[in-house]
Image (cartoon, rainbow, N blue to C red; front, side):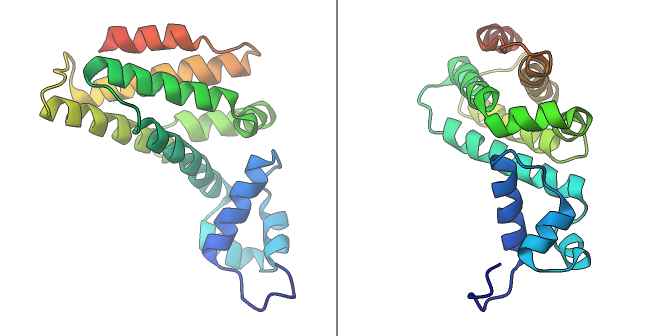
Length: 185
């Protein structure tokens, strides 16, 4: 924080700065973040939780924005679900900050992005499930699998095709992933 600005930093400032650091491909280091905010590490941890929790929130904020964008897609039924999944994958597969994080902090990135209970996968699953539920309730789609299982399968296809390929140094096969999502539906 600049000493020219008399306002004190807030929890929101900590989150915003962490998102900026992540977007620039910087390691989100709690000590550096606290120093930039001119707060103690204890205050920062009280605001954000530990580094993993903060990074999970940063990752979810990015994913949530992409989910929001895909909700503007026209269409209905299966075709809409496939288009949204493919659009989501195209954005995240090209995200340089996510690529940097996956390559520089592989184990942590995979844990935060793919493990239940970290917030990213759980919220992605809930978002896809809600979309499927809305389509079903509007009569646009009748799932052949339980909604929870189908939504989780779609999320896992996205994870496997995007994160797995990026970690292997390969371009993700997003067309193939979209075909798998269509087959699941």
